[in-house]
Amino acid sequence: MRMKVDELLCTGHGRCAKFAPGVFTLDDAGFNTAAGETVDVPAGQEDDATKAMKACPERAISLAD
Ligand code: SF4
Image (cartoon, rainbow, N blue to C red; front, side, top):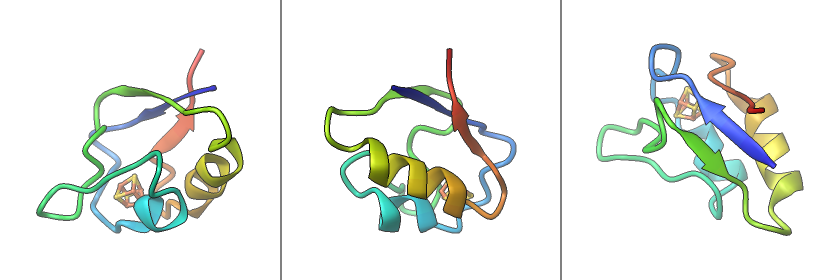
C-alpha cells in the first residue's frame, strides 16, 4: 500500500502522526514530513495509515497507484 501526501493541502494539523505514528511523522512546524511525496506503508500498518488518511481534515492524504 502506498499513500501520497499533498504538499499544498497539508496545513499541519498533525492528526496523521497521531493515528499512524509508524507511518507518518511531523516536522517542527507540525507538517507531515512526507508532504509532496509518496510513502510506502509498512506491512501491518495499513489500518493505522487508513485511519490517518480519513482523519486528515484537509484530505491531504490519498491512496497512490
Ligand atoms: S493530518 Fe493532514 S493536514 Fe495535518 S499534518 Fe497530517 S497530512 Fe497534514
